[in-house]
Amino acid sequence: MTASRPAEPATAQQRRGYWLRTLHQWHWISAAVSLVLLLLFTVTGITLNHAAQIEAEPAVSSITGDLPPSVLRTLQAQAEDDAPLPPSVRRWLEEELDLRVDDRAAEWSEGEAYVSLPRPGGDAWLAIDRESGAVEYELTTRGTIAWLNDLHKGRNTGAVWRWFIDVFAVACLLFALTGLWLLQLHARQRGSTWPLVAAGLAVPALVIVLFMH
Image (cartoon, rainbow, N blue to C red; front, side):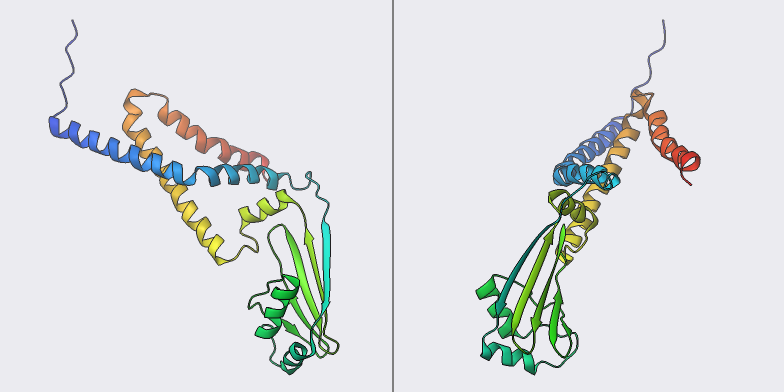
């Protein structure tokens, strides 16, 4: 007859139970917060890795117009390099052509004001002739996959999205660390825990060492 293992002190059991409950709570909260974007970033990780095999046919559209004389005069009076378009010009573009350029810096030359308008999954530009007031806008889009890939990279997405990605990364880090801690707490009952964790480290390390040049 084998001797029974002595029971853990009540305080140790209570402490372990407290950490298990706390870690499980933070683990599922961080999983819920990051779930949708984690799926998105996983899929776009695959599409980015095979970007050369995923062909996209760019779609180009254009809009033209003419500034009225009163608005054109404000454009002609602008002389400062890298300044945004005057408010009256931006207002006219939004009201008449449904184009928003906000306060993006423009490139000013003697005969033209040019605004580069890059965006996720495409590109755009706006040119206004400073003599005649002729407006030309061109938009190029490369499809949904290109748009999602640029969201993954934070390319031309603006400061708010980049901050959002940082918050999402913190949620994923919390999810991973609480998972690691839970593994440690359950490791005694699951003998394969640390060999599997070691494999998760060893496999990518071997791929880097053996196959990456």
